Image (cartoon, rainbow, N blue to C red; front, top):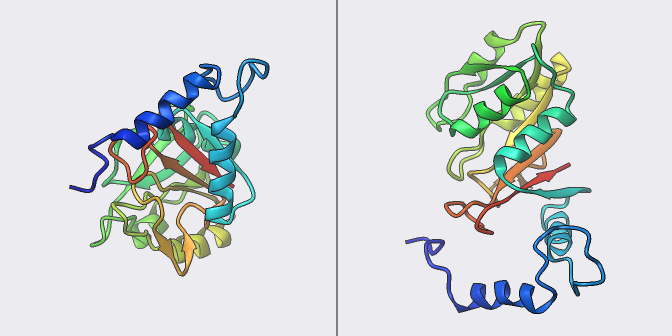
Length: 198
């Protein structure tokens, strides 16, 4: 087993310390009651580790995708291209912002098929949303090159591959925005949560 199934004494001690430090579970506010802002420490650690300028912790990977799409200017009626082999949250976030998900096939790595992506572009395409699956990077080099030529933004869904790299760069730091998930079945867990990297 990978180990994420077991929460041991170290995690229990970390959770209990929150209550000793004021018992505040919000990421901000209540400055007089708390001693530490663990979430801000977590964000800083991610910026340092992933060599990105900004990180923002949110409630879930789904929330991270939705916020990322909004930040990239996706509006109702826009099209967002993603892949067939996927987790439902990616499509849910696209629909939730009022955009239309355009689904393209995957290649042998279970990642976005770049040739199918090229055929799916329309004047309404606003964002390309590859999903790096199960620790294996999408062909993000080709996707970024194509997106740049078409002047389309790329949001990397890296919820399944936290820590994986492409050409020595961490996945989630190559596109315009990257998103991560920390739910209980992910590589790094906080029980629930997500992160946006820019």
